[in-house]
Image (cartoon, rainbow over all chains, first blue to last red; front, side, top):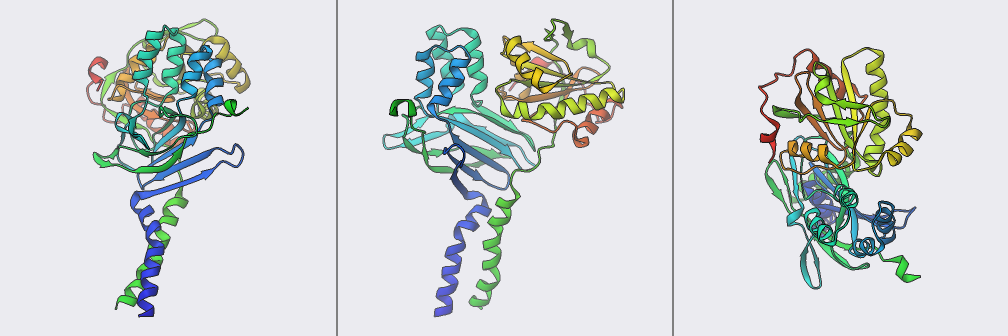
Length: 195
Length: 198
């Protein structure tokens, strides 16, 4: 009886690890230098790494590229995260960010992607140079990676600073769909408003 | 029986995730073949000194065509290896040209970056992103991120692409490019670039 209980306990203790090996691992941590949080989901074939960006970082990036203050504030206050997707395997990895959702207390929301911002900036009369810089800085709405491919870019959740959400991803490896969820992703607080 | 099985499997279950996570990001070395090869969209752009370069003038050589921006961390990270590769290719007199097309930035911004890096390969300005927008159609899904690099064969066709930074002086990358000069790689017939978009 005791040995059976010990066996069950050992198996339970190892379950998270086994899940990781099967492609269900989410790790999170804090950058010791910046204090910003990160989250990482990894399977044998693909990894997704998210890192907080302070609203001030985004403001500075956009202001340096000629954005007016109101437009820069508009983006900075909408929860910008740094995203990296990497193909570790031998197959083709696809990610369709049009189907990603941030899930908060008010339900699921799509990301604010390149195409949406482009329409907004055009309507607002933002100069072409700024629109080009912003478009390339955002992660593409769809990617297809061969072996060894990876990339970085910003994603915008459209949530207020400090919000906590689960991020539901949609990926595929050689056409096989994957739908991991990264729980409790936190939008960085807006330190400018805390001053 | 149950106890024996548990004892045998449990350590393996425990070690599997450790091994998987300890492996970390693999060294990125790959080039993805573009099949069938498509004619590379021609363009003419100016470099930082105002000299104009036309892609089609490089026919007969292999071309490593890189799209980048100064604000892009993987772009900055791969630049030293591109410089090493460029110097090696020039020293050996190999007919391989490395060209970096900056997307969306002006000459002053780029110069502030390249002056610190001591880069000697051609850097072209695509301030309006028009050339990059034509090449993003070659990704098959109509989107592209920076950096993305296309390898063009001596016939002017896109043979490979690589998304994300690479160590460009790695023989694992340069050898397939060299093979294009020998007509190796089983080049299929080209089709117009306009038909390549997804």
